[in-house]
Length: 65
Image (cartoon, rainbow, N blue to C red; front, side):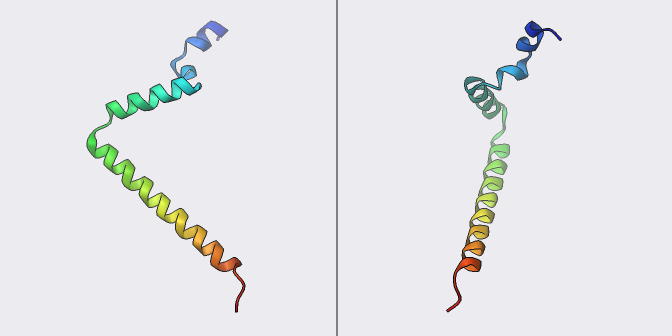
């Protein structure tokens, strides 16, 4: 593969800030409302799990009185 072919590959354009932003916007435009809701539910579940994990670590590290 030549350098010209490599730079012409669409995946290469997503590796820049502008390309990543554009691909995210395009994905949002192509997603259905249901897919967006599912993504939000998964993100909320992940956030709650991370919060619970942090609280477990805090309780383990706190001194016993």
